[in-house]
Every structure is written in structure tokens, then in C-alpha cells.
Amino acid sequence: MLQLLRLLQDGQFHSGEALGAELGVSRAAVWKQLQSLEAERGLRFHKVRGRGYRLEMPLVLLDEASLAAGCQHWPISVVEVVDSTNAEVLRRLQAGQSAPMVVTAEQQTAGRGRRGRQWVSPFGQNLYYSLAIRIEGGLRQLEGLSLVVGLALAKALQQVGVQQTALKWPNDVLVEGAKIAGILVEIAGDPADACDVVIGIGVNVNMPAEAEGIDQAWTSVSAQLGCLVDRNALALKLGDNLAHYLERYLQQGFSSLLDEWQDNHAWQGRSVRLSAGDRHVDGRVLGVNASGALRLEVDGVEQQFSGGELSLRLRDDS
Ligand code: BTN
Image (cartoon, rainbow, N blue to C red; front, top):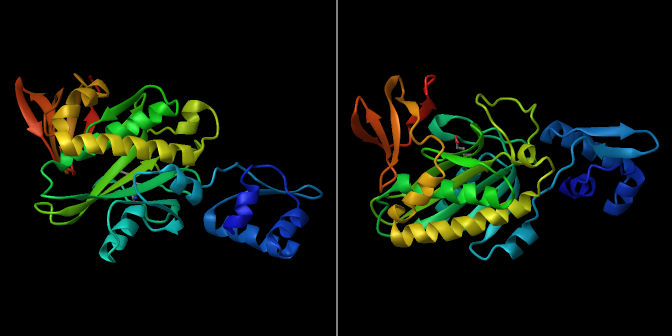
């Protein structure tokens, strides 16, 4: 089916006959595959008598060969459909494959977000990218690591032309207050000793505005640039920036990137509410500290917060 989709990804009309000839199958077989693509992948085709078939929205499919050729940092593989690329990388580590490695997918059926949320992951539209790295000698600052990943992601987005990216602690990437990308870091092994860290990154790339199931303001790379975006080019830029920033982080620690992170900080000086379950703290954002914890001024006194389960919102009066 993916072969057929590659022929149709340009969004132009292709006749059933030409598609069948290209794939060495009958027109009826083409029709059957198109029906499966609609039913199983949620894609929609226009069918016009005398002209053939065309994808309602053109796609840029991931191309494993060009990703592998363009990425010198780690092996990268593309799977068509998976529950979650983070889960897939954790399974591969468990099965003895070693870090570093990257798994990307065209679609996730159970994409995982932070704080137990679902990450909406339709076929062929976004980037679902999980990188495993090995950390020797214990992970002192998971917080700092995930902030550094946010910085690398923001830089990659800037390099493909997305202006005005800003980082929301701990690691969302926003554009004018709307979320464009999120990060979920998971650990395999003992965080106090040698362990593998799985860095899962989701970027809204070509997802159309009418996409359903997202309960917060969001945007996409294509909405920002006004055109269909090459997901392969973005994945390669992301890899380059991750390699660069992670190397600096592992050699010099988060403190060496603190100023750069704060230069990209969305809510510096703003009034916010920090929540953990039904407990809240209201304060003014002072920035982050050298380990990546959030610094808040609460009732005139500085307090510092860290932890993956925390959620931050702007207060109405800020
Ligand atoms: C968030 O809630 O902001 C984090 C979203 C992380 C989503 C990415 S998509 C690739 C990787 N696989 C997953 O299941 N989740 C992460």
C-alpha cells in the first residue's frame, strides 16, 4: 500500500490503469488498496471518472533511505504504523538493540503525551521521532536534559523558517502561544547508574487545522510557513540540532546552555499558575536554574520547582 501511496503523494490525478501498470497489479487491486488506505489510514481520495484518483491532501512520506543517508549521528528507521515510537524504542532496547538509535513513524495508534495524555498522531502528516541515547554514570539532571531537547527542537524549527518559536517550561515549543511541538522523555534502566534515555518528540507538521482531539491551542509548521512541509528535511535538521546540543549538554552540563534557553523562554516575567494534580502555586516566572528547575517568585520569595508531572499555565491577569 505504501508503494501506491508514494505514487499518489503529490496530490495529482493518476489513472487506475497507470497506477496498476506501475505496480504490476490490476485496476481492481488498485481500487482495493485505495479503500484500505481510506479505512485503515484515515486518508481521503477524490475519484473522478476519466481522470483517476488523487489524494485530497498531498503528503510528503518519510523516506528511510534518504534519512539514513542524510543522518550521520545515529541509525534511523521508519515504521509505517506503531503504537508509540517511544514504546517501540523501549522494546528494541529491551530486545538488545543498543543506543543511539532513532525510530520515526508515519502514524502512532497510541501516541503518548506528558502526564498520561494522548498525542494525536494521524498518518503521514506530522513528525513522530524517538531517539535513544546511552547515559553512563547516572543521570543527574533529567530536567536539564529535557530543556536542552526543547532548545534543539526550537532551533531546528527556526532553521526551516518557523519564526517566533518560544520555549514553555519544561519543554513545549510554542509559536505565539500555540503549541507546535512536545517532548516526552522516558528512561530505561537505573537513572542512578548507566541507563538509556528515550527522547520522544512530536511536531505538528502538515496537520490540517480541522484535526480533532487536541484540547489546547496548537499550530503546525505548514500553518506557519503557508506550504506543504518536507518532513524528511525537518527530521534531518532535528537530528543535527539534537546531536549538537546533546553533546554540549553531556560535556558541559545544562548550565552552559542556561542563557540560551532563557533567551528563548516564552513566559519570562509572566504571572503563572503551577499545578500538580489539584495543588496549585501562583507566582511570577524568574527563569530556570542551573539544573533546569523552574524559578518562581511566590509571595515575594523565590521557590524552585522540578518534576515531570507539573503543568504550567498563564494566569489571566498576566
Ligand atoms: C507532550 O505531551 O507535549 C509530549 C508529546 C510527545 C509526543 C511524542 S511523538 C513521538 C514520541 N512517541 C510518543 O508516544 N510520544 C512522543
